[in-house]
Image 1 (cartoon, rainbow, N blue to C red):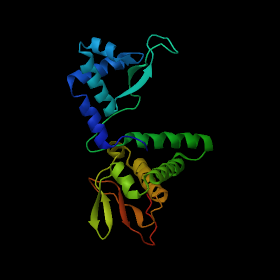
Image 2 (image 1 turned 60 degrees about the vertical axis):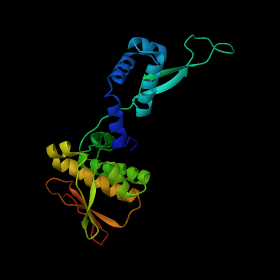
Image 3 (image 1 turned 45 degrees about the horizontal axis):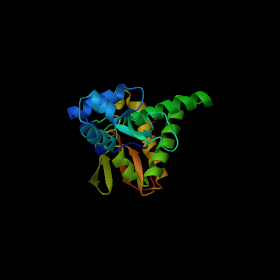
Image 4 (image 1 turned 135 degrees about the vertical axis):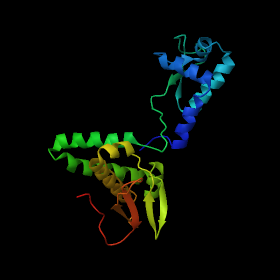
Length: 229
């Protein structure tokens, strides 16, 4: 999963707290084409240097992107330097407290339906296989199961004897409404993450409890990971 960290997302949203930056962002968001500094400054009635400062801060926050182009349409020698233009970033920025990742589970669910439609397998079989595959990708990219847990919002805590409980469910609202489906996918996702990270030091166990994730991470043993069936 390639997305901003929670801290980066908070910073991006915080950047729009400033009324000048909100006005610049709103103007650029409405524009069908990239906007130059002069146009942006004129639209919100700011000096060009002031507008440039705030525009570049919005770029740093990740809510705007930059491209360079010659506004006069001329090319070649003597046509002048390209202008710095701003466009709203295509990526979404959202902040949830506690941290949630409904987009991740949405990808898993959509991909599992597509796979079932193509293969003729049951939705439940496809969901388990797809979630495990997504988990393996996460684990391989992160390099460790611990890193996956931290970046995906599970908030692992040491419960003693090497056991980790996951104090936050990244899919809380979905899990509350569709417990069996989402918990099955969550278990397979984390089993896949351990496989992808090549982490054989732990067991991924189904252990639902009120107020936390349905999965518990236990020290490795000969005991097979629990299933939902």
